[in-house]
Length: 137
Image (cartoon, rainbow, N blue to C red; front, top):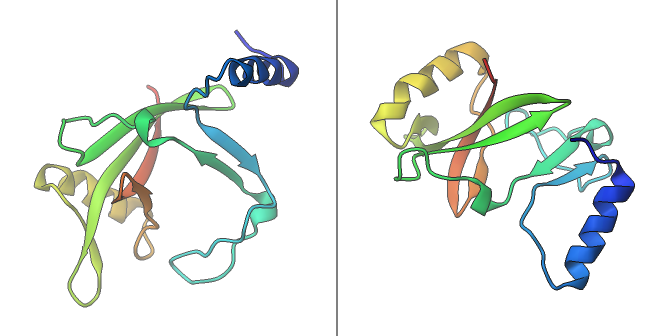
């Protein structure tokens, strides 16, 4: 079922009037505060970006130890697994590594596939994660 924006806004107003604020993803288009790209410290073109904020409660732990979190997102009708691999930086060069050894192989493959340096991380419940989106098969 697809709802138009007027219906979604009306439902939101009714929930807020009832004192309910469901924790749902937030989406912002363009005109956000400028952010910096961690790879080259240049300002990003935020006029062309879309920001999606997934609340911490929507990130269940895949194994129960918070080393890998997973949720489902849909972009333009394409469903995807959005995974968060917990990482830490090691040594003087601040090389990123998966916190748990069982995820290091997957993280190494990700680094070989698309890394030109350190990945930008996102903080979820005070811990650093690298995000990976994979379309459903």
